[in-house]
Amino acid sequence: MSTIYKLIDCCTIIAGQSPESKYYNTDGVGIPFFQGKADFGALYPNIRTYCSQPTKIAEKDDILLSVRAPVGPTNLSPGKVCIGRGLTAIRPGNSVRLKYLLYFFRYYEAQLQRSGTGTTFKAITQNVIKNIEVPVPSLDEQEHIVAKIEELFSKLDASVAELQIAKEKLKVYRQAVLREAFDPISKESILLQDIIEKPRYGTSKKCSYAYQNCSKAVYRIPNICHKDGRIDRKDLKYSVFSDVELKNLDLIENDLLIIRSNGSVSLVGRSAIVKGEDCEATFAGYLIRLRCKKPSDVLSKFLHYYLESHAARTYIEHVAKSTSGVNNINSNEIGNLPVPKCEDINLQAQIIKKIETNLSIYDSIEQTIDTSLQQAEALRQSILKQAFDGELV
Image (cartoon, rainbow, N blue to C red; front, top):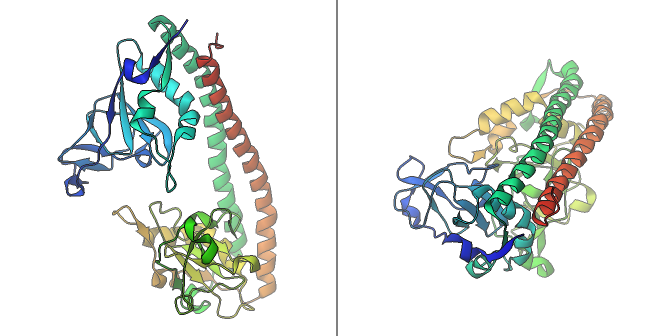
């Protein structure tokens, strides 16, 4: 039997508040500073920033709740830390076990997300947090529920780990497919700049969903689906341009858009091919447009697949890698990428066909693994629901 408490009646709640940016540092001065979900790991956040003049403080093993963009995810505080306005710290009182409350919040995450309000990004207020209703059984029953959850999660985690290992092995297979395809023509190379026009950076203008009815769509990093070489047009932002501003930002069929800057170096240099239906849009500043000088001499898919190969990735990640947290490749660096010399357009087509035939096997297996991982996550949520509905025995 559980007693229903409002969170404010069974926990201490500390609303985050961001200090002035002049007190931030990456030199370890002060205490760790977490701003929101971007800092979260599986259980504890990743320490990237410190604060020398903290405002709001969480203590070790306080639950850190993301309260804005996105709402609901949780981590545990690794020690005494400063929390910004994207987080709220929740410290269980004597009537609530820490792990019980953490699992409750992971069960309750979807409901919290629906409580979020705001047009630019979703957030929840402190009033919403304080009034969350928590079922609180006896301490013995809480420990029993936690033990049962962890028993089932342990089995589930083992299965997920095996699926993740299989997925990593598929990445090795994918690279083997590309290496086998390009090895026979890799003895002689040319520079990418020899076969493309001068690379063009995208627009630096602010993009928004709000401009949709009076402006032009702008492709951004999330629109680059490099694995299948397409542009995803489901989540588009827009901006207003003059004809002069658009002069060098046009797109034509078979252009390549590559990611030039990202926090993850593994994404830098990834590309997508512009199809005919993609040409009415333009592209953002974190992307570079590559256009072949003579489309009859080189196929865009040939370049796209080569950009995914181990040789190209090794070069790109070497020149792009930065210690500042933002990895970047510029137009000169991408232009100096060595590319296998293959003047026979029919041979290029044969290489593409061989790659796609072999990768279709990879894609089918990966889809099966991804479906299994989604089912595992659904099962995880089902376990939590049963636990807090009193059905887990």
